Length: 257
Length: 299
Ligand SMILES: Nc1ncnc2c1ncn2[C@@H]1O[C@H](COP(=O)(O)OP(=O)(O)OP(=O)(O)O)[C@@H](O)[C@H]1O
Ligand SMILES: [Mg+2]
Image (cartoon, rainbow over all chains, first blue to last red; front, side, top):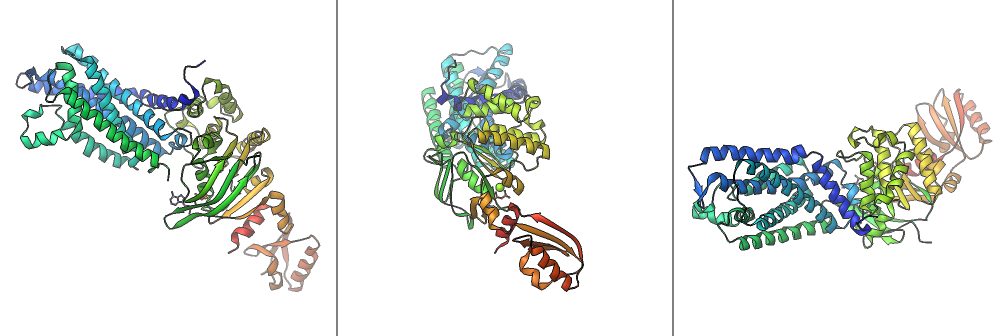
């Protein structure tokens, strides 16, 4: 006897396949990003520790949550986008398109796998970091909520990019010209209060900023913006982008000609 | 009984290109049906429409009575499609792919026995744990067929299943597919090997430039054409008087269509009269290929 009903088995199977897909190569998909984040941490904290304080925190402590969240977001995006573009280029997306899965089930399976990958990478960095650094966690539930909501946003964003891109270089452009700037200009490495007013305003238009600011609040209980406002903005952005992704999937855009 | 496939007035346009120009076709349950036509005729387009991979510009398609758009879930449950391209997922092995494929259709562990059975029947047993990437082309083709069958669909569509497959495997595939047909599955295939269609399929549709130009039982189609082919290799060009019988020619080799064997006498007499020598001669039974060539080469 199985706990999964026949109706749920379809989307469940797709979710499981998407999980296995990155887990089989977890050295690249989880270990490598953890390594990258730790290198950032090592270099930046070594250079700036003792010279910079943010929100009254020493710089290394300030940096860690931002780095974790940046990796969570980038990996959540990478998971859905690379899976879709690969199966489009290889042609094997047809195996899923031939099935009775609805566009909503398709969306949820890819989205959840992205969340799992993002959270797994984040957890990996956190576990390694706390070996070396004393890191408080004032509001664990908020930390989890921001990690899940943020990676869901990026997972949905990755689905849109994966549907839209026809070639790997288009995807690389998406990654380099949208995802990277948004994640670097989100206050990972600094508090936006240290920016000139114009760039502060620009930062407020970046949803990544709220994800990172709220996530950091979960650790230290201090932030640039009230965490509830941040959470509302992150959730609002998630619903907006999900609506766009679902509209694309429903219409069959680029997938069912 | 509800037809396995019902296609009504289906058109598919790609910009200015009319890939399908109004197709009507009904295929009954249990049929073994062949879709023939030259490259670009629109066979794959028709199959992709049935599978819901593309949308028709106009018209309706149904599988086992289920509209492929409105009732897409039931329609797709009823349909197993083997795509023409050799696509595969490089992350997984054969058995995993088959279980996933069954799982997408809501089938769980209770289906594993069937998965093992198709693995066995398609000669994939020793490759079950091999990554898809490492399979040879023919093995990939078998895995593709297995994937289409994983959810036990009553209607099976194979888009050129024997392209790039060696003779031995082709025999095995046909035995397997014949068995599925005997067990009650409706089988629809496209192929460029006409003798396959002739020996296996009870009914044939011939397509050309987005239209069905012939639709009949294999037997009737064969009846429509003159029964014998006379192949001649001559020392000089064929006499003008025999040109109306000509089916095709190559250098001084000619294929003439005869309605009965007794015509041979008259043909030879005319050649002798023209003082042309017969260097080689063969009398061949006409086959589906001749029908095909006749129809397709007509303007
Ligand atoms: N996505 C597409 N965009 C534009 N034109 C297309 C597309 N797919 C197919 N066509 C065109 O539609 C026509 C029918 O193609 P189709 O693939 O159905 O032919 P086919 O009968 O399967 O040929 P083959 O025997 O080579 O497989 C061709 O002219 C083809 O170029
Ligand atoms: Mg084709």
